Image (cartoon, rainbow, N blue to C red; front, side, top):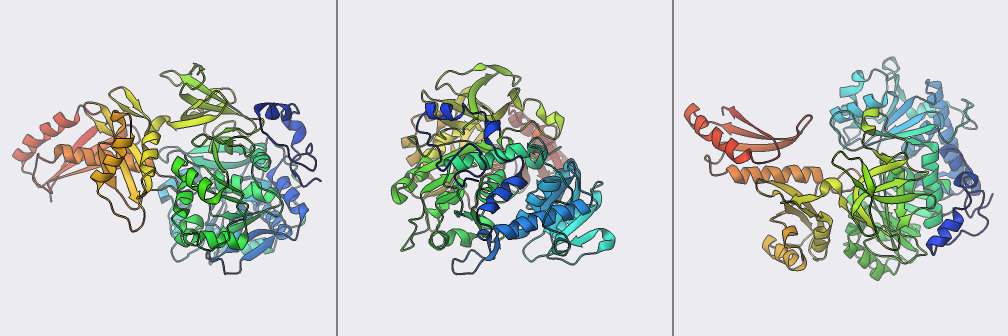
Length: 636
């Protein structure tokens, strides 16, 4: 088997270059089905392990210390453990349509569980930072049969949350525990002990996995109501590993500093499966990954120690690393910087390009496309701010949608519309059929929910999330453009612009900024900086709030829903402040299953006469808002 591209039977000793659109079209003349050499993630991992079975696959660091010795699993050892896990799950009754969910930090067992579960059934990695009720909703929706969790551990509440919800999971047959005391009478078993009892030389199930078989469920979207579980086939996930070998320095013997969670496709597939299936090695930066602040503090010494050719992560990690002096660390191994998950500020891209003299390849995709679908190609001119072109055999269109969200035609060149995508990585639908309404523009074309445009050379430019769009008096404001201005200021570490409800304009832009460590600046001065550089007057934020820390998702994206709720709460509090004495009125804004969002105004300590005077005034001021509200009276 050629090591040029382990997962492609048609490529010889040299990978193709894609310098033009014609190069891609010529490559696509061979049908994808005739190229891809494996049907499953299990076979893809076998292909990667066959190159050099004794080379490291997983290098686990308990702490992200470049001087520490990692716990190493060679490719041969890792493949043996994955097979053991598959046989262990098979012995517990897991079949092709059964689900193994797991709540784990980044441990060697996490990778073994993920790919072992996919070899025999369906893997469902879940964010262990979620609240118990959110975990319950996801595990119920997935019909979890086996659950793998972290045992009682200082600094972790996974075990406590699982105890709260386990009896409410009707399909659960077994609970496997990493690092904990178990009780077989309660269906609890030690994961490592069961693994040790399972053979690892072949799959006892005898399963012949097809590319159309379901490999995993990944949760996405909101966590109120029935969770949205994206259904990936083995073919979807293999395509990710196949495609990135063509466009990234992911190759046999290559190393990636790994700190992304496995419940996110960027960690599980883009960096996890793609690296391992192509014979590379993952240096796991502690159980917390990049959420461990020491990982960022040591980033350049870790680069010097492990010599990765690819330096990549979510934009918040890329930006944070720039605050760490390189010093005398040898970072010459880096050939490419890359990031995705959300837009990379152009200022960050420029700094990497100028300081490290390497191309910055921005990637774009979503859980529904099995992660990366579009990216800047290394052999084509890079346009900072653009996410580039679709991977080979994938397509992108910019479309118009009507008021009901239905397809209403394609957009012209440089016309902003909704980004739609199709290709081998695109999923066939959510697990729950009710979520599939509006999920596809046309058959096979997923509705991304993002706004974007295609320029005259086919470069894709993401202009914002459709739901992030701020509409001020009928005028559309793209928050991303204003955020880019904030990032130009040297004091700004993170910035987000969201819409604040307004009785007159509908919405007004407001900004949240996290400053770099040790830096201070007056909000007025920073707003003046933005005002002078924002040509669109209506887009200048009407309020700036300094915040530390910025709310982030488990994968490091800025979590704008929290900021929107905070913006609404601040606005309503200010709007009603003159009605009663301080302390007599409080405001909360929360998500609501039916209303979407709900403002609650609580009045405390008012007499019946005072309440009768104030309540109608509150309604009069809040009625013009689109967001519904309620007034509650309580006694101190």
